[in-house]
Image (cartoon, rainbow, N blue to C red; front, side, top):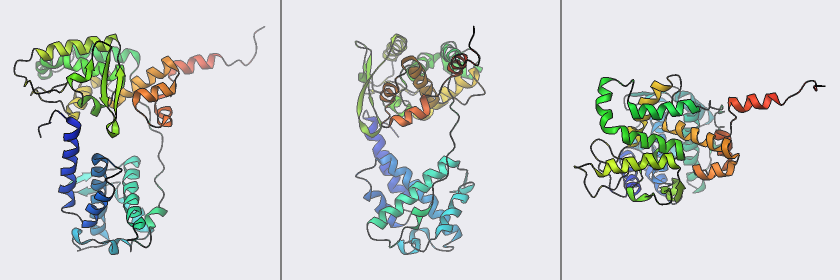
Length: 349
């Protein structure tokens, strides 16, 4: 699919098309639900809801409405479900098959899918189309805190240096590296220096960057446009990339995307995930580093430098500062070491 210059508008259109595609093979009540929540949810959120409900409906016809066509499932059928059906659905999510593909859900994936199912039933219960909402009695799975994975200072330096040099890459990777190293350094430096999200980075256009005041405009979740600032290191990396980008002979002048694929089109989220993985697994093979982990690295570093959790929340675009506290205010080993030295058992004379 070719992206238009308005990346976010095109992404919405893609999501809406996928929603229609899935819903045409599902019960009509799914389309009704997706339309009903459209005023207060994004197309991407609705697409994820639709995918989750497809799994739930598939589960029902496999185990409870055996022999019934999935498109014929009705609210009358769903109203017969009891607590056991929902609990068994959670167990089913541990290992299931849909469209010929095996899937496994962790506790967070299970919680999200159950939350979708509960939102679906709540919607029709509030409309008066269901006389009861048994799904509301099911508790979400207990979520355990995830291990916070980030790069330390030495690993950050090594990651950028590897993206520059290409050392330790395979011969095949090195062949591509000559054409991507300036771009890759700029992307990794932007992650580490600003905490930008992967999707936000993909959506950047050339004219979003203002080198005069070291800033750029980013489109946050929900479509809000926010100005973020960068330091000298990010400036240099971005500036080098812009010079290289402007030298590309076959680049269509109408292409406004800041970062490009080897086909000179807007780079994809997937491509960025793979390039981060390619370099990171050489630098720190025991850590599973993703673009989000680079964002976590920035958030933690900014907090340790400023001790201002509200500033970190603002930089990262968190609407709830508690999210920031949970993920980015964890103390490093250095902080723990310094803290323990202040504990005295016996005062020195």
